[in-house]
Image (cartoon, rainbow, N blue to C red; front, side):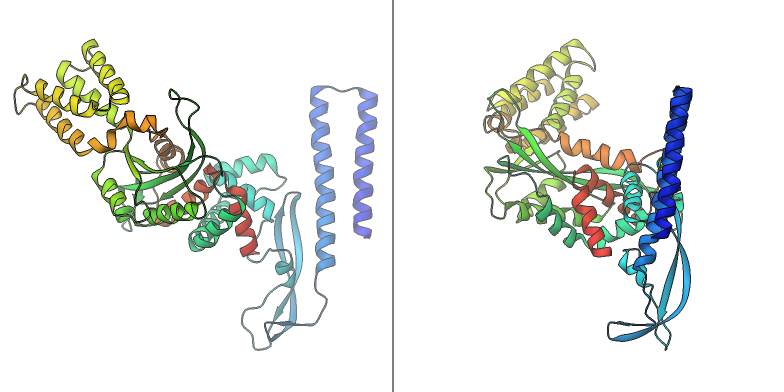
Length: 446
């Protein structure tokens, strides 16, 4: 306790001197900033001394410790630097080992949750949280402004790897804890599932770069709109993202597991699969038992862009006639139960006026085929009347915010493992489930 008493005395003296100085000389912006730094330094010094005293008091004094039925004998004191929110401290740890040799341990590391760690949990969380948004070098610069001693970019990269790997290897336990601690909202009566792909620069074993499709999914809960003219409210959502994988196998498994979990003990008015026009997506949705009985909806804005392409092919790109035609059919799709059939007939009439084999004719031909395949998924007037979402904006936004904003910055290319480690952090952050996820990591990694 003598160490604490001395530290408190020094801190008190510094603060008293600072107050007296301010009273005698007055306060100006520069002196105020200096006062803040002086207070921070004093408090950090006190924090380091107090923490060192806490650790010293918790250290083992025994010569022999029993661990898992084996006797470990004290061998030596080994110092280790820990980065704390008050600055860097050096901890003299008593190291124990069996007489036969082999791997030993430092009891104080176990007691403080610092086994194989060099940052205290709060500093490590700062590094992990910000690394979900920024590069390690940017995180280093940010923490340099916030902490007396900041971890290096290399150390931050290790945190990303450790945490991302933990989430990957303990995905089931993480999901169980989130379901218990921070489940999807009880509000809302429509469960909507969307997924899509986004191209990412990956690094091959040979060192060359290849652009491959990563995948992103959203599990959203919507509340019924207040009236017929308004859109349903998205009250909560979870995000999932995977680095490129054939058939999006892992992502689809996560979607199915999440849908089954959310539906346990709870009934939704409707289950919706809301995606763009890729045939592979709809094939997967139709084959999934977890999504059996879901209403399939083609993203309205994807459909609208198709109609825009048709209008440009008929009347010329960017013309007022094309814009008017597009606007008219876009509105009809939302108001008329038979709009798709009428649109197909209108396109076929236009095709008769355009020479076969031309690019314009091919655009119309492909549009007729597309609309025919997706007719049942484009019953927008009916979907709107049912209070269902018709736009996959959330998953499109997720592609940009989860993947593009972090993995597609200038010059970036990723290994499969490195990219997935970052995504594993980012999806929990963007899903507003960071606290539940982090507590799982602390509890299992302590």
